[in-house]
Length: 93
Image (cartoon, rainbow, N blue to C red; front, side):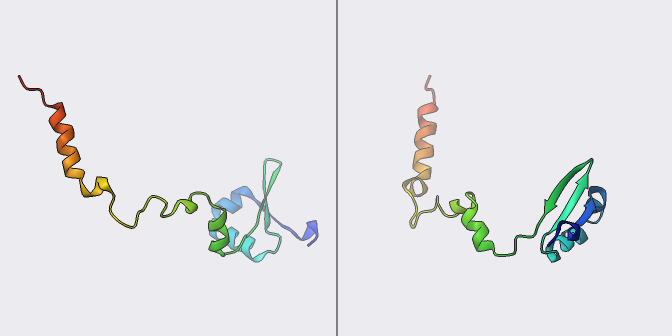
């Protein structure tokens, strides 16, 4: 698509009608160009394939990283550990 075919949207208009503006970016193969104070920003639609985004997202890669198949020792004995911790804090006069 040639540069003159790219849709230019003033930033104020984009923000006033953000849902419509994002839909315009989704429909346009080259996205849309936002213009603000002499600066231009291109907004493009990357698609809805969440699997490809998840593989690139380091936070989503942590999903389930801290889970175990069975309860841990702390989970099984939490009350014992709490009682022992509080018992050591008691001061006997």
